[in-house]
Image (cartoon, rainbow, N blue to C red; front, side, top):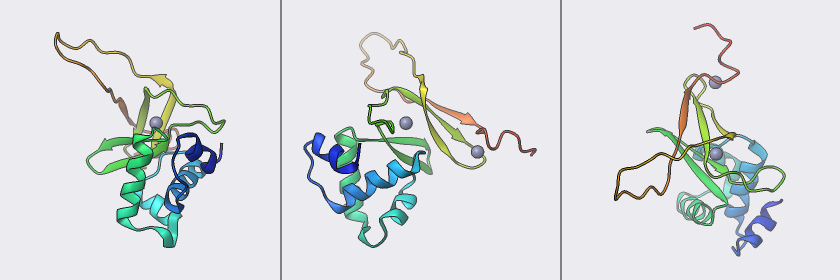
Length: 139
Ligand SMILES: [Zn+2]
Ligand SMILES: [Zn+2]
């Protein structure tokens, strides 16, 4: 599904920055940092428009944000390459060596039991360690 179709499906106007963000995330395959998206946007990047656009895409459910630690925030599409929606409750992997974040589409987060009177709205699971490229390297 291309960027135009995605925006149309979510009843959002096509703007150059929205299109650019979606295209960058689609081409990447792995979640991207703001800096990576900025590079992909080139001349059309400006901070304010970027934040507004990413907010819109997050709220509409086109994009999800992964906060791996204080300094590592990544963005990824909520759609797989075939255009199907990803499970929203998938876990993420954060590699401490190369700082790569991966959507683990096949790994669901479980439902945790919370105390009486609490309402769980969201549960994020970040698994930290070494990715398959880094795990073979001796420290
Ligand atoms: Zn790694
Ligand atoms: Zn993800």
